[in-house]
Length: 238
Image (tube, rainbow, N blue to C red; front, side, top):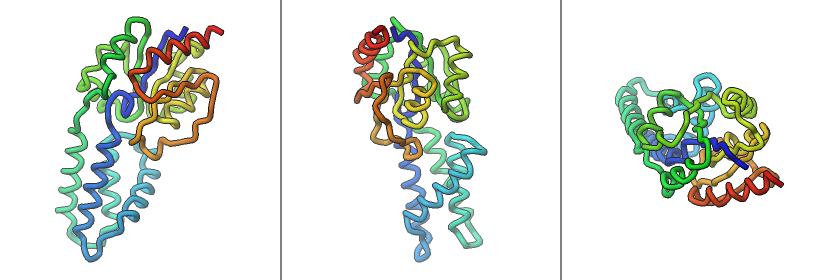
């Protein structure tokens, strides 16, 4: 049977990317104050994508790095000599992002309580270790998990290292998350089961095509996990 559950955190246990989307909207509105030379919103998004493409491999993920990226976007788009007020406004956007609510999504707490009775449970996420650990504590969900693992990138080698480090059996371990790129595809590549819970606000960078697979389960709500995992256990025993 599936006896170990490995959970993504952001946008699986609690809302996350929607707050980054709000921060980007605030940032675009801020740059709109540069009229009549305000950049087009699509241009802002293009430059932000470029900066993140440059920053993430070097600096990693996390809210603070995202805020630094906004500052860099402003520097690339602003040709004036006095940007101090804008810099302070960007920091204010960042403070709101860092303080955003960390509340479990509907059904998460009750479902984790039910699953805890029969499964070993681990959080496996990427980003800033301190930030992710603090969010788990703020969520009130820490009590359900044996441990939290925070890595720089969630690719197939990272899952293989997790399996070895925690003495897991891939054939009886399921990764649960919303991201095709970081949760579903690398877990399958590492020999684990994957439960894909699509989220309407998944970060575009995390989207990839997900094809049918004999160890893949797709479900629309977190609350359905006990049922779909029972079905997976039956399939694993066949």
